[in-house]
Length: 242
Image (cartoon, rainbow, N blue to C red; front, side):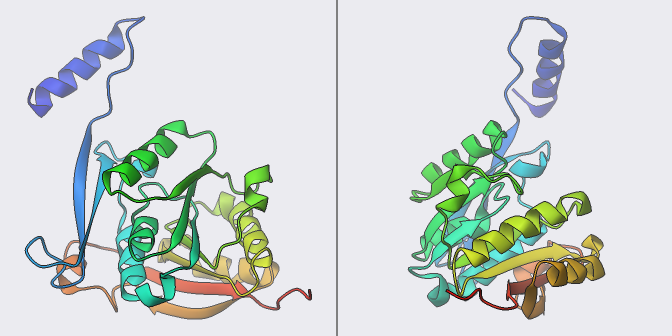
């Protein structure tokens, strides 16, 4: 069936009451790391199941590509580390971390079963042994207390200023729960860097490193991405006394 036929079938299914909703239109994208970062020359390939209708949680956004490349380039640091990815979505950075030897927990909104199921499917597709966990920022459910990451990842998690406080509350808790841990995130400058700085001060956090996301990206990847994307490493201003 061609794409036009698929779209027509979907519309017809929606109009008939009692019929199950049509299946999502998905594709598998391939992401290469190392070598020339190309199909013919690479050290690692990660396959991602994406929803081509661009559901936020099921699409590989530029921030995810940049953060995943950073994980790859910093792979000795990630090997044998405990890693938690927040708002993982299609989980590209977390999967790269798992492939270079990290113990990875991939998390997304607890009630979004479709995204969590897609994460499990992607893990299976890549033979990646990751824990998949429902975790909603600002909700203090039991699983969050069992997380003790060395590194927290978040790609484009700073997209909705209404959720910044919940995100920073969760990040701060995880950092306090894991002395010496760091939060590494990529974000578009649309997020409002001054607001992010304000929230870092509010939650007792500090910036360790701030990079232009394109400064370390291979040219073959940079050509297909747009935006003013930053990568920042954040940790606690002061560690809590034991």
